[in-house]
Picture: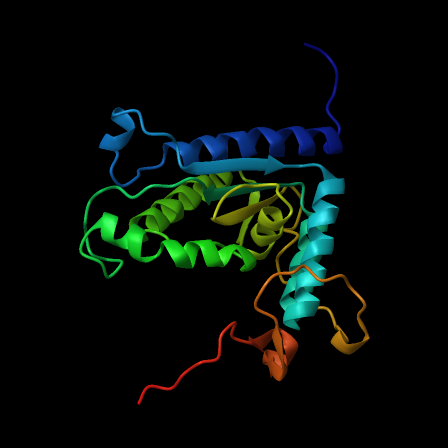
Length: 242
């Protein structure tokens, strides 16, 4: 094999290959109720790699629209990161099922009781950023999978940043199916693109961005941390306990 590799080719090919190895690490990470896989149950860890910059740009546009609704500058900062990285690996819970451990961590005595009692909540969560509630052990499984993927990035010297807001965008735009997911933003640069990135100044009242149709939305006058965060409006009026 002859020829030379320029930086741009090396950068794209290397990040793509490491993203695949990270996905493998996420899939093979330890999971609760592993005996169910031996009985033929399907994989519930979804992994999707996006390295198309046009699609990353669409995700960034959605994030800015969402940030305008929530009146939070942090969404605009993360949108800039989405446009600057080389690729994003999404790791999430899709078509999950409980481990039939009946551990009680969800507050219910059995997995069957939890699924029955929370079915309506899951149906009503379509208009929210993520769908839920989930089995606590499955959320732990997701965390282990994300940690395994991030470890793989570190072993191969690829800058990796774990994020949630771009995962919301991917879910709402149909890039991923997961109920809840974490995005691992990847870059091969002399300095990590997400390191020490400043929050942009945003005039929320002057913005004219499309609605995402997602809840919650920001409460007027609820700015926190100089607009980085904002208090959100509840979907249903909160009732005080007597």
